[in-house]
Length: 129
Image (cartoon, rainbow, N blue to C red; front, side):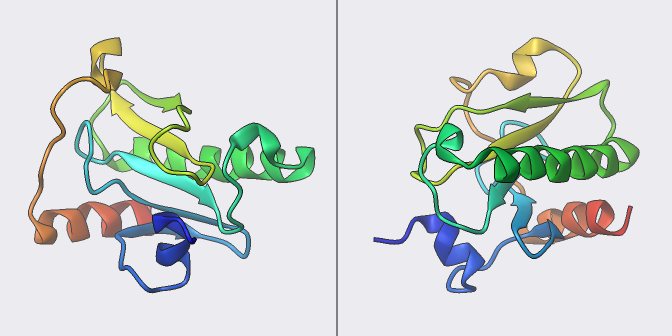
């Protein structure tokens, strides 16, 4: 069964895309911890990040770095935090989270909600950075 991320890759579910390459996709998390929370995934559905071949894992991290640099240019934050949990969706992914302190990456906190128009604006600003 396809993961929700594979459905996004295939266009069955829409997303707020911030970057894309032949192998990877980055989009806004629809249940973000903070404004601008991005998910970076390989388009190939592989459940666990450490099951990725070394080359693909390296390329995924380089792609995530490029996205993080764009995010830092347009989102007010001290850093872009990086985390991999891997329990929520059975598809390897990296969380890129604009942070000003470590508590900004506390996944036990209630998730934020932003209107579609704001999500589109955030995605556009990152995409165009």
